[in-house]
Length: 123
Image (cartoon, rainbow, N blue to C red):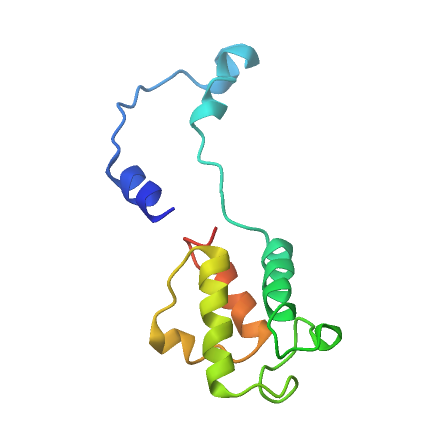
């Protein structure tokens, strides 16, 4: 995913000015959809589901207690090392690297969801 983004940032395509959309039949504009930048970003619901799945599968967690608002230490009784392991599992799940400074702040499902949802490279 990081390689794809790096390549796309360097890719340059010639741009041709086209007449206004109203002056041509719609069928002649359908090719533009091929080049439109579709947002590959995950939906909030996808991020929530995947974050909760990662936390539920953590060995020390009772899956029935996992909700989007659950705090890792207060609600699930995890320690700081468990917290680090969950963040590492989230990095693997979403194919991204969370800097230590940011990872230290992620101590709940809600913060994990917000961080990943707002991360441009989460996949």
